[in-house]
Image (cartoon, rainbow, N blue to C red; front, side, top):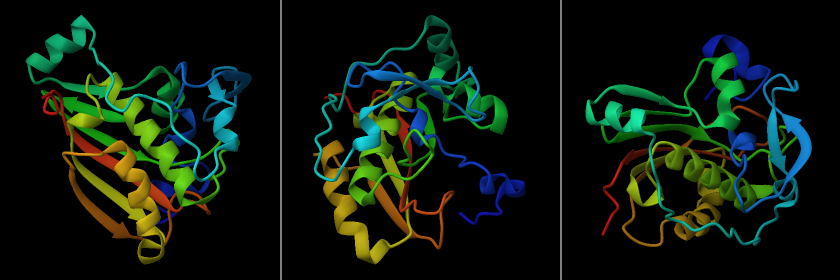
Length: 212
């Protein structure tokens, strides 16, 4: 989690994908402003509402939506071939920083760390808002992989103030995982990708495992 990880490029931009996670999600109305790794016209819509997310604001998405894979992805999954999961809003990060938001092999899905940053690449205000955004991003990436939050079997979270803010984090986590709790490891760290970030969330899921 140190700032000089991976050749130092974390000093310039975060390697995680929080501000790009919403895309065309119907919950939010995209504004004309676009954002991507180089702020070029190749960016993707960023929802206006997320810049104003405050502690206590409800998140209106269904927690466990239906999911699907393309026919090609279904074949790859059946053959246990490795797939890079790259939702359209994440393409600029994938191309520039050479990382996958998630990787799927068979039914196993590993999701890269998600954080809560706004359209200006600034951390949202406080643990509650950052955790809401990060979990929403996790949800989006899982859907692209053909899974859902119900399929998450393990969470790993990284906290800059683990003892001081873990209760606030748990309050948000339990909104997204109200039952059948995944395994969870919380790790205290000295810093994350950007000054002001207080939480990063990564996950492992098994597609289809959360079905009743």
